[in-house]
Length: 339
Image 1 (spheres, rainbow, N blue to C red):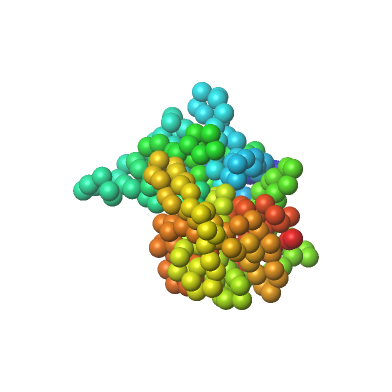
Image 2 (cartoon, rainbow, N blue to C red):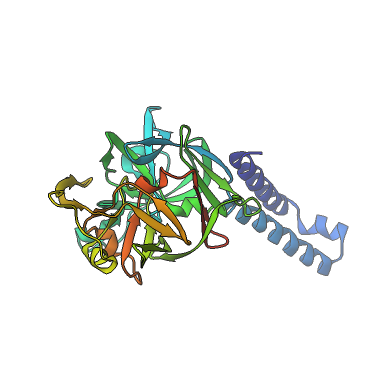
């Protein structure tokens, strides 16, 4: 039974019980049992009905989402209201799933915030691409179902953006965040020729993999690591094509910038940032050294939005694409990496 069918069956069962209760009269119940028993019978049936509907709305989601890995970004396919193709980015550094106003169409009613004092109150930071962008959130909505990459999420609450950015030549219709990934105990990303995201139960963790304790700070997933023998706090961001650290981390680990390597990069809003290459091309996690393409030096907005970290490093798809799989085990607060 898939997620949509299971959800429908539970909702139907719950509301069927409620309708039966409305139909059965006190006289009919009295013919079955005494008055006190009737009260208990009514209470038990009501609780049963509510339990069914609550379970339906809060159920886990398990299955496989088909991904597309393009120009360092991870995408999943959906559809526009008119049937056209829509693209969602999948990003571990985003904790609230968002959709564009164009994508939502008539799928759900947008609940707009009341009493907004100025335009800045609707602005929200998204770490997409590492460089991030500020999105204009026009409201919230609850979708009966959200189908992305072939995986169905029933009863999904989302933020609604006035407009989603364009990355890697694709105008986005939304961003899948960790709030949806947490509908399962485990989220397993596999790269390679046919990249996938598997949402699994805690009973089936990945075997033969390096296990790292993880913490969550302001919605960002963080693990401990070392760079050039010095401790660093590693922010996992598979929504970023590249890996970065700020000048403070550069100095803390004793690294250096590559001469004449300064270049400009443009964020999704069109802002230009200065980036330099570093002489660091590897990182140690859990005592195991991983080689990765070059780390870049940049003062990204994300580094100021993760409280409690020291010597931050943003680990993007330049790292993830070099390993076989990365598993986020929400139930155990661990990250497993398979080289």
